[in-house]
Length: 361
Image (cartoon, rainbow, N blue to C red; front, side):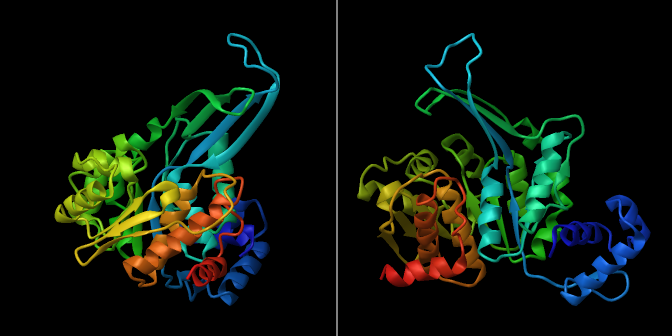
């Protein structure tokens, strides 16, 4: 779909009975132009019949965070209480957004449910996500509140000196708001959820959804938000330290790692994938547990590797792969991400995943 077709398609999903004139007014184009776009969407199989009935699609829903990441790096030694000449960088991030983009690049139909503010960034983020063919029609728009923003000031070497994170908007993703999305989520194939939303919202979602759930804890503190709903999680991906915090077990040895994994499996987690950094991952369920080494690759940047891993794992799970097979998809994705200097690799394609798995045997 073109960008304009994607925009019109989202409006039709919001209201399948919307008139062509309403679309024209909203888009600022003529009614005849809308008719052409509608015809193209029908030819492409995206909509069908009277009332713009949407074609059935398999999709993955992601509930989580979208951030505006702003960083500044001075040209010389950082001077406090002063204006420092330097370089600025603005990009879109957030765990949920990163996972959604990786899924879309792998070929999945993705719907992202997040909270967006009433500001300039909201418009740019929506445009950016539509360009990636990611549906955001079920997301919350919060009036008079800023979109989630992370502001980082680096030193001259590029290392963080100080940062401010404004993520209060995710408190608006309440159980009441998400309750209205349950039927939509349950019509999809799978739900991916990150730990940036409130604990009561996580508990409510996991109580109500009937599709398989893939959960990303995000941090030690936020991992605890899943503590009361572990028996509702199909695939859980903590890192070693988040696993230790959830179980109270010393996970610095292989024996401790296995004991902690058994603890979570006994508490109801169906499949566990523990990120071990450069060591690879540890996987476990009731049938077996094993350590899988990281794929060989040239390390450029580790930012976003965990998000790419869980996205590829979720994609494989939606395709009916086993835990080990899904874990291999994740390791392959992480190896692709780590070779790129940004959080999302343009080489995140299904063919590249399959190639790396084949050549890692």
